[in-house]
Length: 156
Image 1: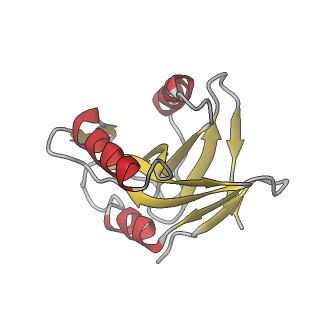
Image 2: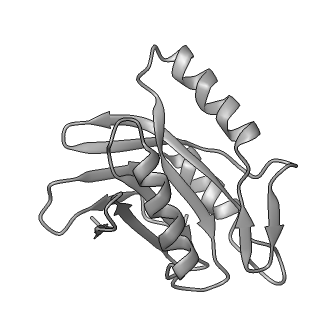
């Protein structure tokens, strides 16, 4: 798999791991040719001092997919999150969002940044939102805070 599994902040204060299953979802949705953007939510467990991302939902038939836009509608994704929350007695939780870009090395758009800030502000647990963009050759991984602050994670 081309996408790295382990990520950290520069100061090592946060460690992040994507399970092999999540990395497979990323690989299977890389935008090649004229394929549309894909995306979903990220679910996993929170540990001190890190995150283990174990599930990445994939687009549902209700989501809107275009070459340069992915609009995730909550219905199918929310049901998966609730089911896993209950099955894990509350340990598997919503961690963040992922989507693709048709770029080798992806960078967030202004729309991405605005959406991430909005979603981070809405989090009941007040934790930052994990935001991932899947590119053809690399990932963009950051923690987005509700106040607009952003922490870029780097491969570990």
